[in-house]
Length: 466
Image (cartoon, rainbow, N blue to C red; front, side, top):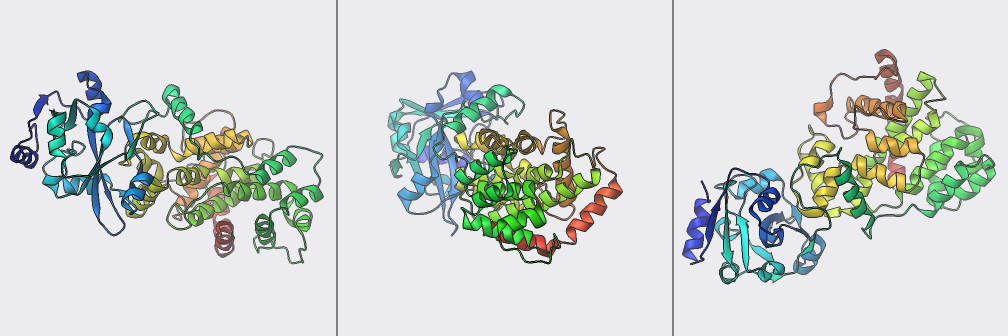
């Protein structure tokens, strides 16, 4: 098959002249264009979207552009979401998956076309098959899309063109993505309070009174620290009148510093409260991981290599890349949430690698929340153990510096997955491997003690998300 039958009938009925360009089987459109000497700017691709009320739309953009969902939503005064792969295929029953044509009428879809395509003398496109492209000159392109609105709905890509799976071990491609991240005007800076807390934590001269004074500059962080210190988890029955009391009587300098640092850091992100990746779910996963990591580190009892308060901070912030994804890419983040709800058996990492979106955002998402979070924490100059855990908490083969902290956070995630907490997915509920850090029996014993505090930890997580 070189063309979808419904598409061929439609083009002939519209008297649109086109040429067919057969080729060997190839699923990568960017690779195919490179091999055939076709410019990506003259290659049209479809993006199928929907509103929350299930109104559908095809947007047609050049291959080397990224759809601007915010601009499109503002233009049409409706908010659009990407369809997943299965939903897209359901509209194009006579096309091979991934070879859907950017022509809407045969599939009864409304359509909008990016203006830049009409600047090309000839435009190429898929026609329902991975074995042929079709092309048409500008006059026939105008005839094809005469009934559809044309507008600027996309932006030129800033990343190297590729629709291949991202090689997350290729430093060249990863550095290109990091450089592109640096150029995003929405990349958050570390909050001022978090920076002050980092400076104080790194100085041996900082007193409990000075730390308390800094925390008390932010009433919301102060309230969270006080709630934390007063929770039944710590068993303190006296009155706490100040953050300094929380430091000296209950939590200690380092733990209070870490709690306040994590809460202050999270203020940099604008992310929805609800959903499997929302702020509430983030804090529940973060807090359970932090408490479990601290408890396991105490049980392991190797403070020189696994400091319990540092393990706590690693647990709190290891998944901060989820918040960064939501902050930078809100529309795509909604699709991630939708996919996590629809396919609870899949891990977030798996969904990120297979999300059906286009342009630069696809490369950012496929880099993964782990790499995104690690990169941000490194830019914010958090302790290296913390940024390393963010980078590598899904890398079972990591053997570099701070490997014991990474193994500890991975162990926490596998243990919590047994209780359906976190983003590993139900398919990851296999035998927990402790990596030689601790015996299985001791690991599960610590887990049971932490889970016995579920009401208190859930309440704390809700307060932190508020």
